[in-house]
Image (cartoon, rainbow, N blue to C red; front, top):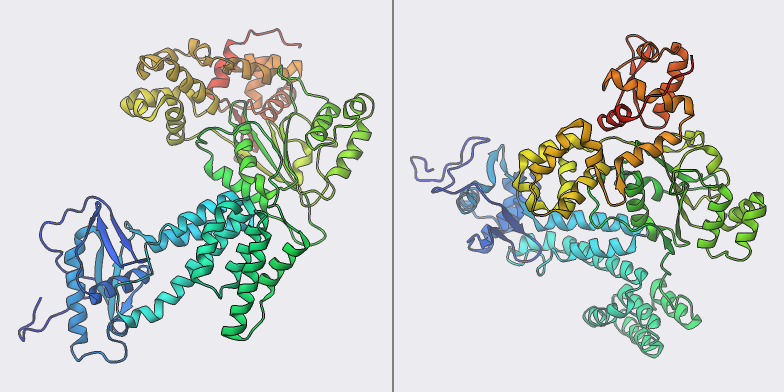
Length: 619
């Protein structure tokens, strides 16, 4: 736009200039700052010519959606000597940028400057910062393998030196900061890889880095450590001697603490091996963990958060939920993900046998001690003295950094003596109810999966293409499984075993409530058997009440109505309902208007209750 004098006229505040001819707004656009500044759309580089237009784009992106004043753009373009027409030239550069980028981003005038809205775009700098932040957190929590992977991904965002094709004025302000962040990420990645035992693969990289940056003491220290762990002490001595000479000749200083420390540890023969990998005795984790990602992240954070000071308490978390809700799968995934933070090991103990009966604490303790390497006389002690086993376990865990996973607890009696005593250890328990010991620990209750996660879980087993091909039948299937992970895994396994059958055909089998539970069985997975084992943990009186409640439907219903249906006094009916809630076979919701609880069934538990024969209740 030009005014009557032929001078470029800026648009009104908040207005965007015309974007040019017929630019399609579909697709994604990517911006690069960590190398030559560029924009790519659908794999094709957007043509931008000249250092100044690249500078304007870089300054707007670095502002992260904040206002960039004309004066800031002027300084980046011309330093302290802007031309008289600087504002008009800035306007021209912005106009060219808008035309080149089209409708993929918005650049609009606001007050004394411009704002670039690129929320839908990919920016390599922002990806680098996110991965670097996650990698730092993983390194601080001793998750070295994950830290190395994340920090390596952050460094992969770089394609050269930052801001290679901008003006010198912007370069002198921004490049040192960005290159410093890159150097920090590289050093952290090397530290993570060394801690994980990748010293052999690191030696060539570190030799190259030390040659490029001969006065970087940290890189040289890492090289000495890696060479030492590869039994190449002579070369390590040479690397140290060369570094000492260079520092003396170039700077007139002696090696600092990190470089001297690495050299002295090598001379004393310390840390010749990388940090030993923790001894992990856990069930295999799922090939692709689906759903519960927020819950998994929360549990990892709880187990890895160490309280400072002498009064630190055991970190403990309890996962509860109805039968088949995925408690064990979640605990296994979290424990595998935390393993590196517990150098003395991760042990798992199942507190129920194959028939659902509680295992004796002495047998569980003997198993855990054997897993920790204390095999001598363990079996004999298990037969004679629980107290002796508890004493040995407490001594073994007093100063250890250990993660103990106790799966499927049914009572406090089972947990007696199984809690690690050291403040540096952590405990993860799964249970259908809430043992009394958990009053001071975090409790996470698992509900049904939402529809999106349920579909993803089906796709994991049956194949994503197959699930996408029949969306209506998949919606029916998800509804029949009612968000229960076990039911969804069984459904996925059955579909995978019959690739020639349609999803709609299997959904039709589940449509009849009378045959749904029978259809949700495959191999050693059986929803009926899982729910039946849950009933065996109830008192006989409460187990007998459950089938009578099926006539009330899904609910909600009150203890008064349950008493009328069963012929029991209301107080006795309420005790039975509370036991069913404690066993996660009913849900309880407070009704604040009437000051009483209301109860409801999960749809699949209701079907099981309706199919269970009714016994006469004692009156």
